[in-house]
Image 1: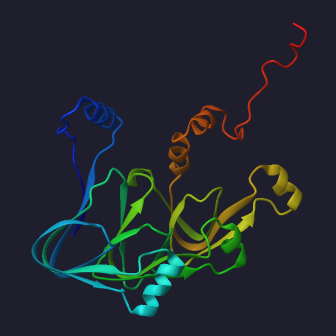
Image 2: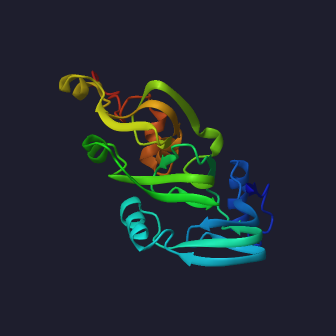
Image 3: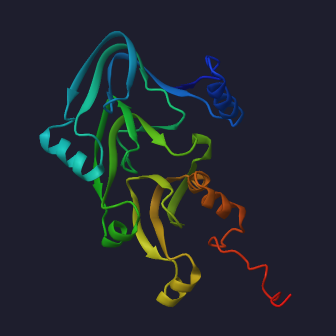
Length: 266
């Protein structure tokens, strides 16, 4: 069993500065979270550094997760770690606490698996196969914004993925011999049977150049795509210039209207 548990509030501050930070974090809806995994004569795979503590008849083993060649390929191509930790036995495991967000996804043995952004995989149960998926065309590798390789997850079990936004803000879009175009790289994951490539927003180069959209991430076929529309909003809120962009009209590209125009000589 895999669960994401959270503390409703933190009350252990012993100085006013930390208490002030906790006050605003709490009122903003931020919650400290942990992943709890319960094993019964089974195993779980963890990324190095993910373990916080564990209790029970458990044993940790470190391996390359499928051999030297596979470990090197996973490290060099998908950005995942070369060594992986496997915990076997019966007991309860807690992973490192964070204010970040987790996305739980169940992978079935008879499914094509999923392909997700590099670095999202955090832990996984039972028989998950974590590898690298190479982009199938030049446009997606050069212009898709995801690089030449992404992380592939196949097999059977529950994958714990680190998400840039809360699970409630992740949208699950079903494609049935359909097409989805995304302006940006906030598509987190797709099923393995969905085709991905980068395409011009319009058929002609001139229309693409003046449309303000440029190249779009395009997903086609039948399957599921998970997107995080609010990811870019949070990224902009980190800087003052980003906050100013959010205050402007959507699609303004950050430009400002000259309010002094026509007032020369006054």
